[in-house]
Image 1: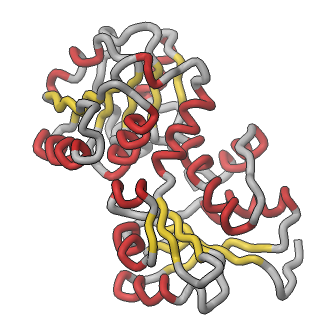
Image 2 (image 1 turned 45 degrees about the vertical axis):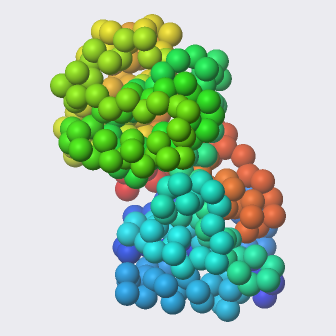
Length: 287
């Protein structure tokens, strides 16, 4: 569609940014809704990120998504921050307010939970403990979302135990009533027993990376298995879980759902995630 001089403009900021699928995603929603607006990629070097973010209101942008390596800097550059962004220590969504101030948010955990609920509608937070593999930024977002939803306990496993312990200690400040148990990586299969959810936040199983070595023999048949990786869509972990009869949830939906709050704030229309959108995005995954 053509743009007018009143077009609403948002962006994705990264370094590099050419890999981002966000312009394809937001472009689909803009076209579907017939909105006079656009969403552009902005490659911003680390030394310029603060000035670039502070310039968003002056340039008339409604806001921006922020990707690596700028998520921590984006939180610092904003005037305000949501509680979930503060808990994450990073922002992936910036909204320019009517007064010109900037609010930082982090929607990664929201995207994970919405994807989980969509792909496994019978899953409930109260069903039992969740096993989370990995202790990076993605794991932080997943754990925060699960604990906010009411999961009674988290079993956190990482190849480097010290990193998992540091993450658990930090999150315990925000969720003192819900335990985060750190286990040995070598015991990961044993700790699957009695769990209701298994989440892989590591890169193992991603295209070009080694597969995750994990037997699901101890995992209860009712447990849901999800992987935040979406290239390939069906990772070796999800393939194994599918063969065992588990409900599985792939990682593409997390990418799609995390974008919804920003789009709503910038363009004034609430987008939906459906099969048409998934099919559209699958055409670009891996490219």
